[in-house]
Amino acid sequence: MSNKIEGVIAMLAALLVLFSAMLNPMVSMGIAVAALIALGTYHFLKKP
Figure 1 (cartoon, helix red, strand yellow):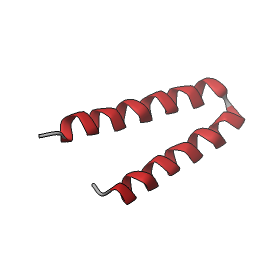
Figure 2 (cartoon, helix red, strand yellow):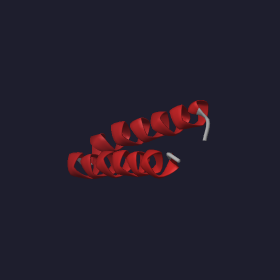
Figure 3 (cartoon, one colour):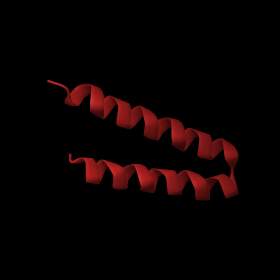
Figure 4 (cartoon, one colour):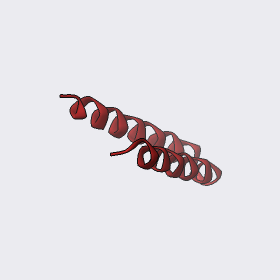
């Protein structure tokens, strides 16, 4: 994945967390943690 696509995915995740925080902060925290774990796992598995 290119850096541009990763940036777009990160921005979309940030917006999702921002708007879900208005509804329920615990759900927002869960989404943020899940997104960070998914992105970290992707980067860890991507390395040769």
